[in-house]
Length: 282
Image 1 (cartoon, one colour):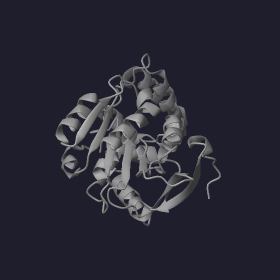
Image 2 (tube, rainbow, N blue to C red):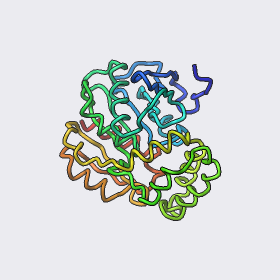
Image 3 (spheres, rainbow, N blue to C red):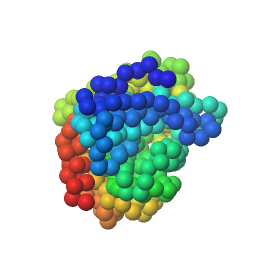
Image 4 (cartoon, rainbow, N blue to C red):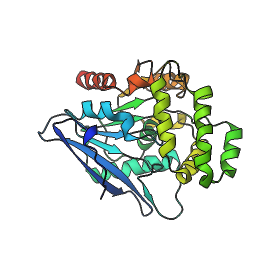
């Protein structure tokens, strides 16, 4: 039973419950459900955040969305909250299978739920489409990663790096993000969020996940997406390749692309408003 309080992440009219869900013999994931006290006709939202992303990253989104949607917030296996035993892999396919297992246990029905995810979460959603037994109404994908760019030199370094030294290495990761991966001048908030993510990551899971994700490419999985897609990009967010996001949009016949320019806006009620409008249009 969790001792954390998640009430700050849901609307005043909603309640929350956190629990561990066993997805296979070796992995249990934390699922946080935000639910309205009154029933609505809206589809359920299964929300999958990005790689090592903290729930605090999504505070304003979850508070706004939970006003009229039930949300199942899934924390993927690389996060501290997962419980793993034995030898466990951290590939995108593993996250996708986890997601399909959770949806099966939630007993969701065809066309009555939405898959919404960011970064790795969005990538896992696309990869999970081949495993789903129940068809979602649509997908909402925020800053999706087609590939996970980790320079070869960094990969070699990570292979040799002992996770026990992660505390001393965190400043180097933040320096790299600030100087080579993020546009700090245009979105200082994004940098602060990523620093918090780095500070709270599990170094042992992080190392395995980084090496596994470096080999992934999404392109052959796109053909398995057979539902409408709302694709969010942020043209000032250099950490998520905009060219690849636009290519995904071109390759998905049921896709609608919306550029919100900054990571801050994709993580705001503005994104939720766009999703509501997309659903209403059918």
